[in-house]
Amino acid sequence: MRFLSTILFLFSFTSCDYTNQVSEELNQEPYFDLTGLVERQLAHLDSLRPSVEITATINDQQEVEAMQKDSTDWVETLKLFSEASINRPVLQGRYQVKDSTDQANGWNIRIYRAQQPADVEIPYLAVYYQDTLQNVRKIETVFLEKNVLYRTERRMEMQLSPTELGPLLTKYQSSGTQKMIFRDSVHYRVEATLEYPS
Image (cartoon, rainbow, N blue to C red):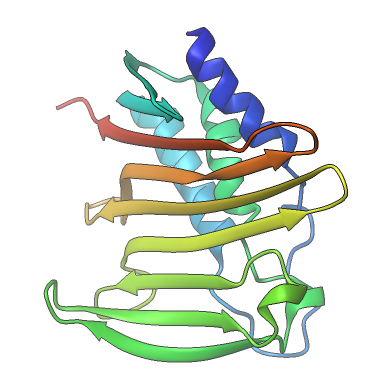
């Protein structure tokens, strides 16, 4: 458990709360609503209460643990994805939008790439979907942050399956590197699989 606590500390050290900066004031068409997707997943997770198996790796050490998160735990876990939202007023007009296809799965892909990647914390966001953006199947994103004390790079992914309730979170993962001043780099990876009650 202490091992997983270390992982959570790495996440929280670089967490900035962007979830209150919603896109209602935008004059332009908003980007994909990642915050809204996360909020819907939190509602499902709170009512369905899945179990989750987490594999956490820090440098060369690995730990596997099965658990059942409560609503507060899920808010903290998915906060990382909410913070990767590019649908904020300060970011409007700073991304190129491209549509592509994932032929292996028969999905469409909406890709957002920052025009000036060095100037934003989220240089890349990809939304994999079937037919419409409401039928999300996968989210991929990158989060970068640096200052005089540390530099972190975080690559995140969430996978969703179609259900009667709409897309439902089934897997998520986060991997990256954190370099703090006067310390060696820390490489980590967290993979989680959710199992819902029958």
